[in-house]
Amino acid sequence: MVRTKAVARPPTREPPPPWRRVPNRAIAPGTRARFTQLWREGVKVDDIATVIGVSRRTAFNWQQNLLRYGSFMAPLQGRIGRRHKLSVNDEIALMSALERDGWMY
Image 1 (cartoon, rainbow, N blue to C red):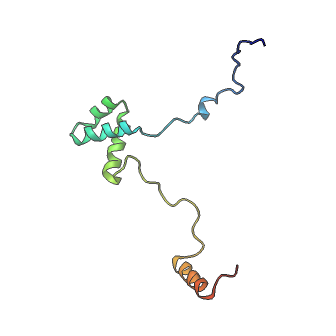
Image 2: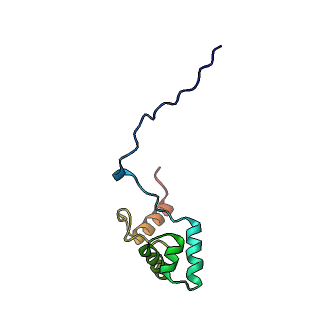
Image 3: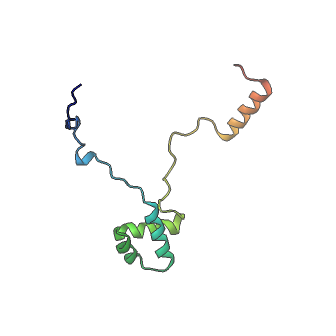
C-alpha cells in the first residue's frame, strides 16, 4: 500500500466581505470585573478606559448603565413581538370555563 502526502486544499468559500462581518459585541467577564473594581475604588472613568483598553465613550456608557439599571447593558426598549389577543381577564375567564366545562379534545 502506497501512502501519499496530504495536500492542503484552498478553502471552498471566500470569507464574507467586511460589511457583512459581525464583531463580537459581548463584554468579557474579566473586563467587566476590572471595570467594576476600579470604578468602586474611585478611579476616574477616563483612567479606567485607558487601563482596560476601551474608548472613553464606552466606559462612560458602562458607568451610566450601571448607575441607571445596575447592569452594563441597557434593557431592551419596548415589547418584543406582537400584543396578546386576549387580555389577562379574558385568559382567566377562559381557563376557568375550560376547567369547569372540560376540554373538547
